[in-house]
Image (cartoon, rainbow, N blue to C red):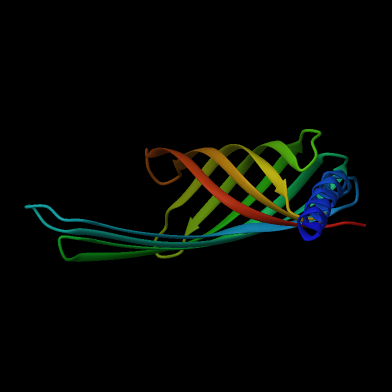
Amino acid sequence: MTKKYFLVIILFSISLNSNLFAQEALKKGCYSLGGSIEFQSSTNESQIGDTKWLAFTFQPTLSYFFVDNLSTGLSIGYGYYESTIWNDKSINRTISFHPVIRYYFAGGKFTPFLEAGYIYSNYLTGNEDANSFSFASGINYFLSKSVALEPYIEYQRSIYIDGDQKVDGFFIGMRINYFIIN
């Protein structure tokens, strides 16, 4: 019985401390390292022919807090996209630059945020570039004073430079952030 009380006291202490730590991580002068890794695969079989899609993206992010609760950052991403439509294989690779600004609302263990960003993407396997604007919202769930899980939703509007193509995207995901506290 004493072990259960001891465990409850430890869990309560960790929970209380993580609420205090969250405020420390969002102060002026702190840095945040984060990013995402994504893998997608799909297959569509039809009478006309088979379609396959494979995608891998990697996007690390570094942010800096110029004032409390407000950070600006930059992501540099790499994407690999492979599609096969009726035995015709196509491969694209992209490099992207994504400056972003993010505001964190006062919170404890759960700290919500709003984010706006611009994305420039260059397709390395062709001469096509895209400009995108993104808006995101989510919550940082602080596991410790320096580490937070981040479920988020994002809307993205992309406009391709060499054509009249416009693409709207809606994303739901999970990221992880590491805060470097000064």
